[in-house]
Length: 195
Image (cartoon, rainbow, N blue to C red):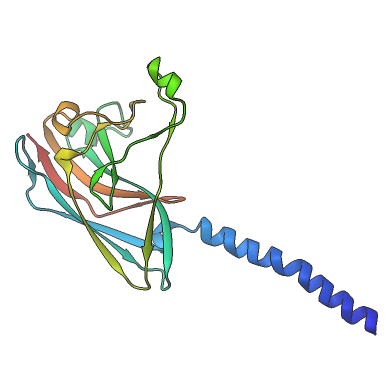
């Protein structure tokens, strides 16, 4: 009897960490759309040289608990040109992106891992994650000027480093805000024109 009781207790102590580890892994890789909900608004629907392109982003905690979200944030411009919309696949020039440090509204720089390679023109880096803390039910608001971010074609292999008007051709686009956190969650789409 004494042996059986201790055997059950020992088994419980062995299984308990495995149960909590599974819960921890599930939380770490939970679908971000079940945790946060971003939305965006823009002051003017035309992005014009010499004028700020202010975007307001709201991110709401919909998880029902306090959360820390490790996130890589960016804005995307998706071409609304007839040929781009008609295609069933994307090609170079259909979409552009600008990574952003959302808490400051500034371009998100790469962490350079090998400075010697940079001197040779090869960039070896890692993308830094921001940690966003949300209390239960909290909504955070952020403001960013799209004309102050660095942009590049999404199919390009360079980290964005050009001004919006140097990188993105004039035309109509769908603007979205994206949070990468073990998955992708997108805001609503807003139609803008780049002039």
